[in-house]
Structures are given as C-alpha cells and as structure tokens.
Amino acid sequence: MLIAFSAALLLAALLSLTVRMPAVKTASGASVMAFAIATQGVVVHFAGKGSTAASAFSAFALLLWLFLLAAYLGSVRDGSFKKRHWDDPVGRLAIGTWVAGTASALTAAHLNFPQLHPALVVLGILNVGLLIFYLFAASLSAGEIAGRKLQGKLHGVILLTTVALQSVALLLHELFGAKEYMIYRVLILLGILFYVAGFALLVLRYRRRDWSLTDDWPETNCILYGAVAITGAAALKSSVFPDGVLLGMWIFALLLLLLVESMEIVRGVQRIRKYGWGRGIGVYAPAQWSRLFTLGMFYFFTQQGERIFPGEAGSALRELRQWILNGGAWVIAVLLAAEVVLWMIRVLKKGSSDRAHSS
Image (cartoon, rainbow, N blue to C red; front, side):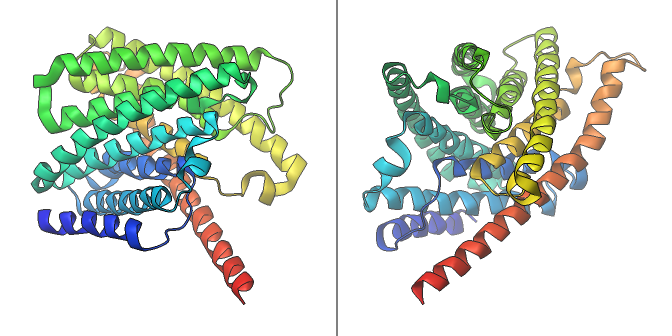
C-alpha cells in the first residue's frame, strides 16, 4: 500500500511536469475537503468506522487530491499560476482550500490506511509549510484589499485562514497524538483570532446597503459556521478547552448554521424567480463544495462531541444531537449526490464544447 501510494505521488509529479493539465479553479480544493470530511462523519454513520465504504471514500479523496496537486503544480510549470491563483487578492485567499483539502485528505487516509503513516507524516509536515506560505499570502491579500479598497468584495473565503489552521491542528493530532499539545493550542487560538477579525470585516461589509441577497451572497459565506465547527472539533480532539466551552461553541455554530442556511433558502427562492431553476440554482461552481464541507464539519463535531452534551436522559440538547446525527446524515448525503451530478453535467458539457471547438 505504501509503495502504491508513493508511486501515485510520483505519477502526479510527472504529470504536472510533462502533461498539460486542465485549468482548475483555486477553490477546487474544497471538493477534497467535502469528500474527506464525509468519510469521517456521514460515511461512518451509515457504514461504520473502518468499513469498506469509508476506505473507498478516503481513497477517492486521495485520488482527487493527487489530481488537483498535479493541476496546481502544472499551473506553476506553464506560467499560469500567477494569473489563475495569485493576482486577485480576494481569490488568492481560496488557496486555503489547498491547505485544508490536503489536511482533510491525509487525516481521512490515516484513519483508514494506517500503513501509510510514514508517507503521511512527511506530507503532513510539508502541509505545515504550505500553511505558512498561505498565511503569508493572506497577509499580502489583506494589505492589497485595504490599499485597493476592495472590502466590498469580501465574502466567507476570508475565514479560510481559520479553517486552514484548524485542519492542520486536526491532522497533526491524528498523526502525532496528544504529545504536541502546545502546538495545537497555538494553532487553535491563532485560528480564533483570524475568525474574529474575519467575522468583523464581514459584518462591516454587509452592513452596507449596496448589495442584494440574490447576487451578492456567495456560497462561501457558509464558512461562517463551518469555521466555528472545525475550531470546536480541533479543540475537542486536542482537549484545549473544557467541555462547557466546547458546548458553547457547538451552540454558536448551530445558531450561525440556522441563520446562514435560512438566508440561503430565501436566496435560492429569489434566484429561481429571477433566473429560473437552471441558472438560479442548477449551475455548478467549485465554491459549492464549501457548503458540503461546512455541513459535514458541523456533523463531525456533533458526532465526535458526545461527551460535551448533558448526560441526563431526556436532555433537549442530547435529543437534538441525536436528531442531527440521524437526519443530518441523509441531508448531507443527498446534497453530496446532487453536487456530484452537477459536477458530472458540467464535465460533460465542457467536453462537448471542447470537441465542438476542435472540430
């Protein structure tokens, strides 16, 4: 297994150097995040930990990660990296999906293929380097956004700094256990600081009246609750905060989820009225994977956090948790299937268009 995985890594590197890889959006790393967290949460609910289904989902997440790795490295080779992934200071923040996607895929792989531990440790350390690069890129973006007065274009992507930090904390805990406690604490607390700053900027951005819910509320705003959920999950796994604080974080994440998703329902209705079903809600966009990741992360936090809920029988919060685990699994599964269908339609249409142009 280790040899096969090493060969796949080598193949991805060779493809990036020798084959013209397709152009992929910066935010496409969110697709890996979505599949990887589904592996750890929803798939475990339906099929069980260590099941064939969990292994299959984890393997698919790794293969998808390898493909995107080859595509992003290929953009460096062909000179398109700067235009595609760097020049737009807001879009540059989506590089956080590369960090979180890598961390999520490696975490899921370690849970299902522990024999890959040596290779995953090396990749995990390299991902820490990618995190440092991303935080540097995000700091440059912050300066450019302020200097060019682009605050009106901000959206939930700014919170990927928090998601990236906490995903690395979860990965390192999975690879090294509890012995690196201070590192986890630093990552988690730094992520909270980034969240507070990003949240404040989004409040200032949406306090303005020159925006509409129909066209100016992107899918990435779901990271408002996803970033809280992954912070809670990382703190839960590494025991950074007491259970009472973790329960408070869970409740805060739930309230944000209800607020954001209620707005999404209203937005969906408005878009259908304005653009019709197809253009309104039936168009594929890589950022849509971020919703699946954030829902999946809230589900994972709920699933793993049994100890933080009141222990007495009949507790309203404990009953709510059980309902979320049972009903939420189906909601996420249906949304994941729908997103895969949209993605396949997009691929087929693009393939037909490319063939028409070539002929």
